[in-house]
Length: 456
Ligand SMILES: [Zn+2]
Image 1 (cartoon, rainbow, N blue to C red):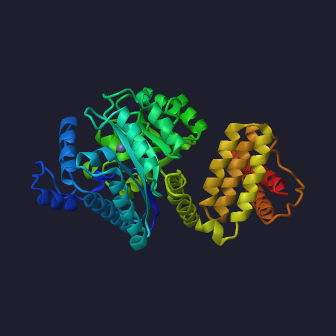
Image 2: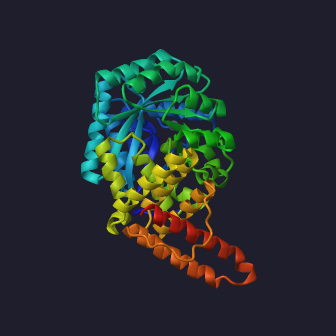
Image 3: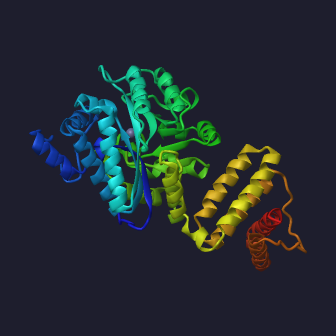
């Protein structure tokens, strides 16, 4: 796949240990005197099944032995990601794996936090930390240790520790056993997330959504085949991290093209992309975006919208999130439409609130997100589509208006101009087989004009 180094990408789902490069892993293994398994090569591990995956993961964790090792892995991963266009990575960090090597919680997050700060200074890439508890056998895992992790986070606050979640083997502990830890995490102001929709099927997603009440669903893959559940996730406004290459390699979806996330995206699902375990799935975030471009048919603007979803997930500290989000929408600032769009959003949102229609509110939110990433003509076109849908939604007549009342605001005038152009286009669609086009253009013109009037 050809890299697009200028496309700003974000990895919102990557486990820190598995973000290690094969070269660094080889160096750490050499130092520790650990022999790497057969098949380990320039792109990573050559595991074949769950048994060899778990075996190789143990090897990986056995060579990352100190907080300095964790920091080296984090800095190297951020530098490599930045070189291929990444602007933000959230690392999923398991304090229990640190405890195994006698690394105290505070030492671990301080070391990784310093590495993130250094990468920001030297490579301009943002980072953050999501703590994770792990479903696994043994004295350092399970629900009690999940509570211990939250207690550590409270006792040793760190600016970049923003999230708390659960990962691991679904055969151990019911997901609902973690409700107390998630309540404590929420009370501590952490963004919550849960691995779900893999081994337990969609039942895990339902538990994460309704019992743990998480902000972010990690994977949720099995739920994405279920239209009603997708609708529930969309309505609840939850973010889903999608790691397409991982899902194919573990057999959750047959091919990248058949991943259910692409259809769910078109139904309004809020998505951020991730690599999960790059040294096992032999991918990186740049290639993951290219996979989404190829298989979901997403263009640059839609891909950047996924990066913005990551930036605004709550996992990045607010100041950095605002800066990054602004960097991701340069077109709107360049043309001075930022304020106008905000005003339009407020005006439309007010109307929608008056109509008490959550679906339209969600639609308009999506519309504005889309509009903010596009140059002016596409802003107008996105508004047209959104307004048209909102009008249909509320049964507002969208018949052609012969004598429009001119709008007065700059965006209103722009919308009026757009409406006139759409009407001119409609006039030219007089062939019988183009009637459908003409109707669509008339309706779009009327919707754009309605939006112009809304803006006064
Ligand atoms: Zn994961």
